[in-house]
Image (cartoon, rainbow, N blue to C red):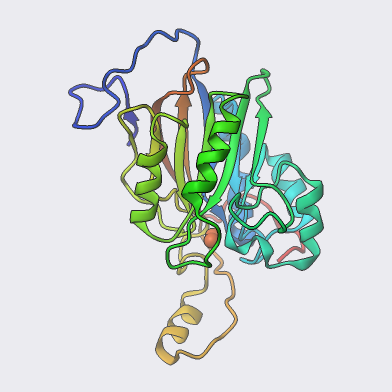
Amino acid sequence: MPADADAAPAPPHSAEGTTGSDTAPCLRILLVGDIYARPGRRAAAEWIPALRRDRQLDLVVANAENAAGGHGVTESIVRKLYAYGVDVITTGNHVWDRAEFLPQLQRQERVLRPLNYPVEAPGRGSIVMPTRAGQPVAVVSLQGRTLMHPVDCPFHAIQAEVERLRQLTPIIVVDFHAETTAEKAAMGWYLDGRVSAVIGTHTHVQTADDRLLPAGTAYLTDVGMTGAQDSVIGVRPDIAIERFLTAVPKRFKPAEGNVQLNGVIVEVEPATGRARRIERLQLAAAAGGGSDDDREP
Ligand SMILES: [Fe+2]
Ligand SMILES: [Fe+2]
């Protein structure tokens, strides 16, 4: 269900008080949850071009940290996602899984790694990307550190980055790739009024707490996963169960079958960067979705 700044009556802490002074049409930005292996790419092929057209999207961001067999992403998959209509690719802790891809993080400026890795790590954590109409939109990939690898503090890192980006554009979208609900919620409140959206990724399960925070930031704890529906966060259930039963490490294999796309569309005032609406997407196809049947994992 969409949360809408115009909906009445307004619940506590809704976006009540939005000025409405910006009469230009809102920008529509789609963020697609972690694309997992070939089933996720099939879902991306099935739905992203149609969403781009039918929902008149101005910018499409997709998290692709698991797009190659659940482990990282490859150069050819990046090209394929661009062809489906993705403008900017965000990632997370799995972006490092394929050593051969790391030089691409230097070359491909539209593929982001989390901002708050040490400066010595390859790649960059943000981009200012013009929409097709020429409106600059900043996208940031950021990672949490509670129950995760102890990267630099995401709160201090994003503080400095938002100050820099706001000199360039009022429209800033943050993909916060984190494990715990509390760290994500804290980030949403920390950035409320300073960015257009804080959207969580990494857990692969969509939460139902989409809302507009009082100072105008769209927030969702986790957008979910794009991949096989009948899975344990993308992995074959029998393998995941065996790992829990035995505690013996076993290589994960992606699940197959029915696919889903999880995403979120945020509508943003172009002049102010203030979010006006947030809508969760859960699309599913019993028949298996699109036709990404390449030889990539
Ligand atoms: Fe993921
Ligand atoms: Fe992750």
